[in-house]
Image (cartoon, rainbow, N blue to C red):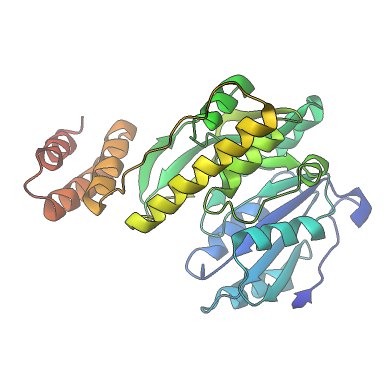
Length: 311
């Protein structure tokens, strides 16, 4: 493992750091500069920024190191690929902030994000985990629409126990001591490691989301393979079974059944989101792609008609 140590805080010594930003990086050369810019532009400045390059094979590391040379808050670690869970847990071990803020290397944060989250966490000591609403773009940054989530603990926790993650992982800020207390991210629960953590954090305190859309989330076409959907379904089922035992809940956890989504269905979903968000050009683009991929599906032509009308 090699590491570039840039640990100074803008407002005090390392021991006084309020926030540690955790960003795993893997083959994100195209987007990671935009992500870093959004973090370094936060109005709240008392943070360290830990970027672990998880064995990227593109020029992601070079991009991150160029930023680290210009801003002492950015700390860069690079080593062979170990996967997202190991990378996040390594980040947690390195972190010295009171709060842990997550960001993915292809997303971006509103400049107000840290200020709003720190203020809410400071005001509510029982709050362990705080996310936010988000807006979403396509892989090329075209606006699609909003991606709202519930705001209160009861609704969020109920959704999680039904198998639906209701906290945007890259938008979250968490109490570092609480994350460590529950054991961090657990190996064997990927690709739903975040849902597993939210459920366990809700057992030691409150979880919530801010109403402001503080995350700009880039949607991708990953996860369309049936085997991935099946793996996620199995993983979520194990997470719920584990939670039922740990919480001594009555009955049995719900059975999770998810079908693999086709490329055309993903395009239709994006088109409908864009129609709702008023992004007509984006809606027309993805409605057209849906028709191209599934021209004999009524659903494809229906969304195209609505996209052309703008409603």
